[in-house]
Amino acid sequence: MTLPRFDQIRPKIEQHIREVKDFPKKGINFRDIMPLFTNPQLVNELCVVIADHVRHTVGHVDSVAGLEARGFLFGPQVAIQLGVPFVPIRKKGKLPGATIEASYVKEYGEDRVEIQEGAIKNGDIVFLIDDLLATGGTLRAATDLVVKAGGKVGEAFVLIELAPLNGRSKLPDVNLTTLISYDSA
Image (cartoon, rainbow, N blue to C red; front, side, top):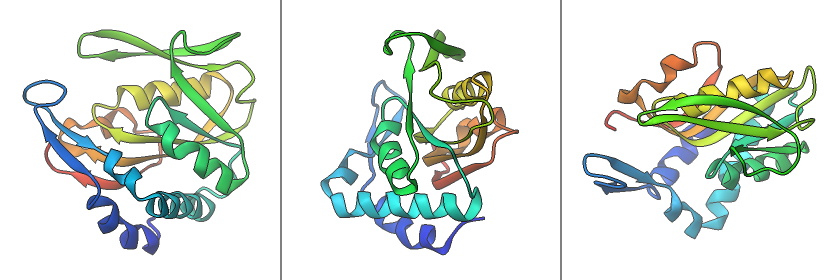
């Protein structure tokens, strides 16, 4: 289910996404969301719309978890709107203290993400947020991490999905919402 407000905000957001050809390497067309942050009112409106979406589709959530790094740009604001804690999901070695980790495969090897122990409690319903779904490896690892910590992913949200990379196929058990889907990667 998509709220009508997503349909209203989508064109405004699309106007602020810049395509950068051959970045970070030849053959990749990077979707740059940073121009969006030149319009703080629009960023705020987007976070309010996402929070409203969570209230109407997921209902109760215990926390919002954002993936490093651009999930950190939206996650805390959505968490504030919902009145719940924000849980950062970071690359291995970036969080102090005891952590829980999950691994994922990238095109050139394995990587790991982690959260601090106790950030997600048994039975917690977590809303995951990130900027981009490409191959699905990072979001799959984040989902596994939430479950490993004792939580349940109520929904995952990405601003952009690169549909040809088929990342959605790695998340058959996740209710996934995408604001903008591109037919080319």
